[in-house]
Image (cartoon, rainbow, N blue to C red; front, side, top):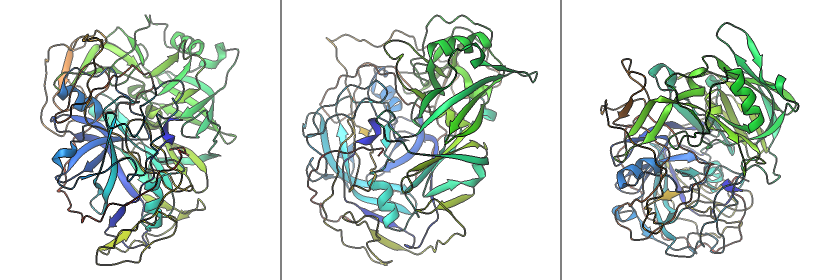
Length: 590
C-alpha cells in the first residue's frame, strides 16, 4: 500500500539534547515560504547547505498531475523543489549505497489510484544524493539519502513516512530523542477567514494534551492490506447540526447505515463516501444542484457548487466507532465549506468565491467500491495518535487551540510525567543494526558514523526515504526536483481559468486562503503568498533535463499555509558514505 515502501538508510542524528530526553519533538503544520515567494501549507522541511525549505506531508504518495504549466506554479503546487546542485553539502550517491531496493517499483496504489513508478535504479527516473536535513533548531540529520524523482508517482507534495518500519522514528527513539515510536497530529484549521484558520502540529514521541477533548478511543492498527495507515474505523453515524439547534440524521434515509473508513492524514478531503450517502447528505442540506463538478485546486476532486454562498450554514457531526467506542467529531461549517482555491501560473493561490467547495468526495465508478477515507480535513476536528511500538492508534475530539502541552508516551503506551529533558550539547549516532538501542552516550564531539547494513528496505515511487530493519519505519522525504509533462506536445491540463488578480496581499505572514472582510461574492482574489492544490500540465524546475508524464489521480493531498520564517542553516560535518546493501521491500506505513 502507498505509505509503505521506504528505503532503509543509515544516518547520523545530531541533537542538542541528552539521550535521557523524553520530551516529544513538535513539528509545525503551517504555511511554508517557498523559493518562488509563495507558500504551501504543511511541515517545514529544510534540506541542504544553504538551506532549501520544502513543504512535506505526513505520509503521502506523491504523483504529478494537474499542476500549473509554469515553473513558479509547479513549485507552489509541489510544496517546493529540491535543487541538489545548489547544495554544498550534497553528496552524489546511487541506489545501492542509499539502501534502496533497485527492483522495487511503485507502492501499491492506495484505495484504487496511483500509477506504477519506474525502477529505482533507472537514472532517468531517479537521481540519488545525500544531504543535510534540519528537523528543528536542535535536531539535524547528516548525509541523509534522498531520491530525486524525475517522473510521476503519486501525490502533490513530498512525504514523511511514519509507519511500522520507519527509520526516522526508530532512529529518534534509539538516540533517546523520543521515548517511543509514537506520532500524533492535529491538522489545524484551514478556513478562509482569519478566525477560521490555525496552525497544526505533528508531534513525534507523544501527543499534545492541550489539543484533545475528553476520553480518546483506541483500537489496534490493522494490517489487512486495505488501508495504507492500518487505521480503520467504522463511520456509524452522520448528523447535520442546524444553527437552530435541531439535528438531522443523514443515515435515516439509508438502508445500510455504517461503513468502514481508513484514516489518511494526507488525503485532500474531509471524507469520501458512497454516492448514495452523498445524495442523502445533499438533500439534508437543502438539495442544491450538483452538476458533477469537482475542484481541481487545493481541495482536489471535492464537490463544487456553482454558487457564491455555501448551500448549508450548519455543522456536520461524524460518529466513528473506534475499538467498540463511539466518538462524535463535529466539523464546523467553515471547515466543511470554502471557496474554490486554485493555483495560478505565478505560484499564487486564487480564491474563487463564486464556486463553493464541500469537502466531501462522492465515490463514483470506477471508485465506487473503494474503501471510504477520513482525510486531512477530518483532523481539523479530531486528534490522532499512532504508537508503532504498541501497534495501536487513538482518536479524540480535537480542542482547536494554539495552546500546547506536550506529553511523552513510552513504548508501552503510557504517558510520561515530567520533562526528563536535560538540554546539553550532544551528538548521537544512530544504530541501524539494532536501532531500538541507543548507540552512543552523550558527547561534546562528533561521533563517527556507523557502517551497518539494513534489512527490509523498499522505496516509495516518487521519492526518498529511509526504512530500517524489520522493526523500523522510514522517513520517506519524497522530493520532486523537476517535472515536465508532454503528451504529444499538447497541453492536457483541465480547462479552467485563472482569473485576473483583483486583490493581492504580498505581506507575510498571510493566512491562506483567507478572504479580506471587504471581499465581494462572485469575484476571484489572489493571495501573494498562499497554499496550493491541483492543476497539471508542463513545467520545469531549473537544472535538470529529464521529463515526466503525470496522469491524473484522485487521491491527492494539497494543503494550506501561513508563512514560515526560515532559519539559518546549520553546518553538519560530513561522515563517509555509508555502504548499505539492498534488500527486498516492506511497507512504509507498516
